[in-house]
Image 1 (cartoon, rainbow, N blue to C red):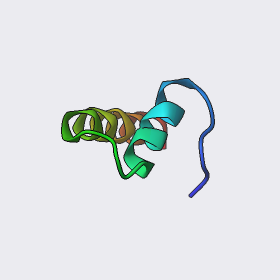
Image 2 (tube, rainbow, N blue to C red; image 1 turned 90 degrees about the horizontal axis):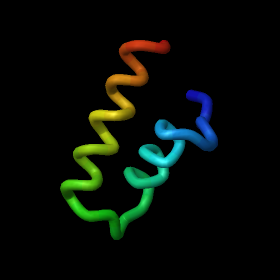
Image 3 (cartoon, rainbow, N blue to C red; image 1 turned 180 degrees about the horizontal axis):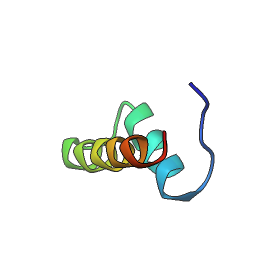
Image 4 (cartoon, rainbow, N blue to C red; image 1 turned 60 degrees about the vertical axis):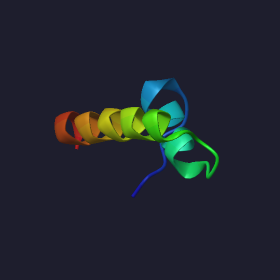
Length: 41
């Protein structure tokens, strides 16, 4: 899968990739990525 850089989706991916992100941040980021995947891929 291609890595997205920049923008909302990119920062969401970075949040998920970071081990020290908070749980709520991770769930928000996961939702963002899921929406993006559903819409764009």
